[in-house]
Length: 130
Image (cartoon, helix red, strand yellow):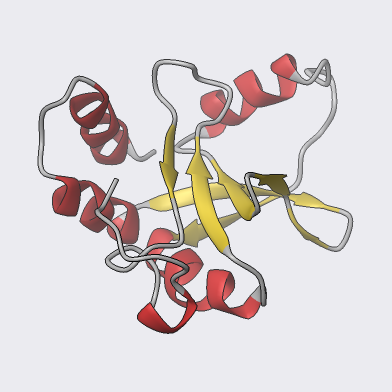
């Protein structure tokens, strides 16, 4: 589904690639965000609320398996990354970012609530991208 985003994540984790290109790729990508109850699946860590997004159904399946819920049917929304960063994160009302492919130790990436990633008005600190 989002091979380009996956490729940019691999580059950054290897210490290569442009952080701005990674953020740009997330903004362009369609990602899958599972539902939890009546909202999008999120997790709290380090004082930040993370929207959990996946680059494809296989990455979502690895997440389900890691949770011991491989047999569960998952409902999810397919959202453009820009919508997550520009609309959903600011609407959460707390420091929030996007966590991509969190069940993939070598392929996960956090997009924290910093200037350059989320809108300045909801950024909690100035920082870099990716």
